[in-house]
Length: 505
Image 1 (cartoon, rainbow, N blue to C red):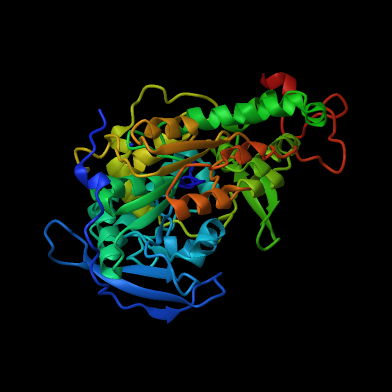
Image 2 (image 1 turned 180 degrees about the horizontal axis):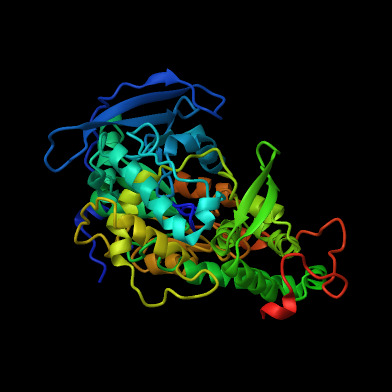
């Protein structure tokens, strides 16, 4: 799942086929030649190559896409024959750009198994569909009357530009997973292990649905089940995690003392900014240079939302909100990544729109979209965009449960604002050989935290859930709340330069 919205304005009766219990058919000899290469953040030499596939896999005519493939070879001379295929999130992340992150998760497994990173069609070097949208902090984006016009213009320009190099209806998940099967066959692997995170769990499960006989084991981290229309439940789930953070602050002596009524602080900020956006001078986290930004209600929520993904960042929210109440938005804008991407990984927004507009927005139910404070912040902007974006088809069984007897390790963070544990429980019902491990104090993404890599290593090495010590995830503590270097100014001692608390409730 993306941590930020695609527009700066706001932002899957168990029937087991015989093939499930039988050995898969022999894998073909490799037909794709890979060459030695170097990729960013990986010390050792790796192997790279491309595989051409038809953009339109149904007609098999016209334009072809060169899929970008990076293989981090196993270190051991006598390696295992089944690699790990890494399915990136987003939708819109390019797997090859996540080599460092992938190795942090499966580095130990890479001793005996290849790690395969394939840029999903529409991302990275696989005909990447990139869009440039206006800066979210620009004055025109802070003006509701101009915001829609500016966003619509940028979206239309991007759509028309990308239409010259791509049929935007051909970049959906099911089509992309057929690409992945072509890559497996071309590389000569008989069976593969899957790791998927966030949207990558949707992709991994869709691959299982179509090519289960080729799967040896699966790790799903932060599950997005087929039944879930991305965005639909973000307001509810993010709001629940925000409430948990506030309750935790209230139970911690220092945090509660420094933030007597955190909910009221947030409510007051939102109320004031809904009426009049505020100008603030904020230091760019990359350049250090001061920038004048316009802070709107949507902007503030867009900053709070991604901070909830990582408990260490969420632990800074009380102090950041208190500072914002005093008119200083620097901390909030920085931890929320509003002034720029918080990572070096690029999100390919065109591909994201092609997926979300075909697979998610048409399935969004209008009921239950009002949980505050986020409300329709997520769905609304995507609905506007999808009204202008070409929509691909969706297979009839796309939203049906994926069923498999293959061993599946499901990981969830109890503080995940977008893919909470309930979704892991949902898919577990259709995987009889599965285990759902919940980390009570972790947010979005468990694999790289604490004992996560060790759990995954043991699971994939054995393709067995026996004797996995998932209790180790429960021993990871919740981060303590950030303590400012000085006591904040009390409301009784000085009125806020941003708002008069008494007058806004």
